[in-house]
Image (cartoon, rainbow, N blue to C red):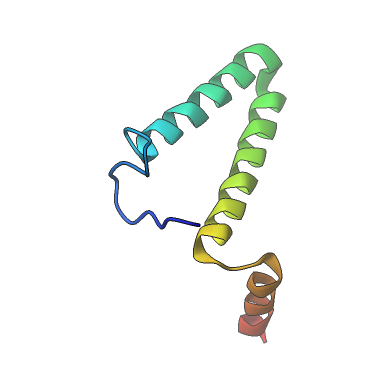
Length: 76
């Protein structure tokens, strides 16, 4: 069962909603940058962006194949 998030409010039972997730991502990037250097900072940021993208597709109910088909259809 998926739940769409349309506003900035709490998500399910998580207090703070998107702000909590943003703060967690910021702390992860900060720790990666502090302990691993700039390369680790970029790697954690890129993997976080990929995770966000996959979660966004899952929330929309769109599979990767459907997304790529739509993208290829728009370019033609």
